Image (cartoon, rainbow, N blue to C red; front, top):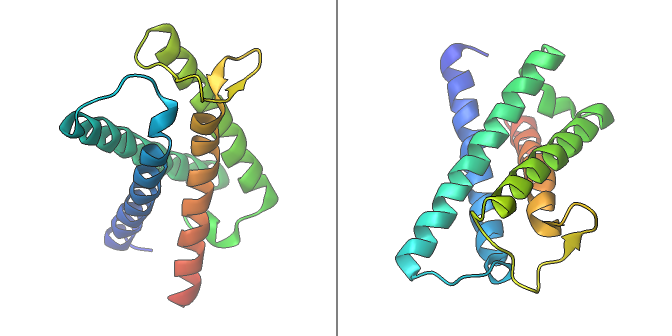
Length: 146
């Protein structure tokens, strides 16, 4: 994979991750307290989705370095899956804990919480499952292009 095709690959990962996160962010909107105007809502969830896409690209790059393989999603192994899930859980737990304790955002009474951690279940699942879904989609695309 040359440099240009690798950059295109990263952009594809970012685009897929962004799309999945926009859908997720908007679906979980009722589970957060504090209504916003439509323009503010669009800005907040677009920026959150950009950050989630950057997280996914960073995770991909970190794993490519760790496994010394830029094509690791094409052979998605149980160890890859476990790493993505654990990294997502740890990262999301830290972000959600920080955001709640610094009043960046608040949950509505409908948000299911993880006991002892007092963080929302859905934001945690988001960073665990959506990068994994992105890598599965990349794997399918890579398989069709061969």
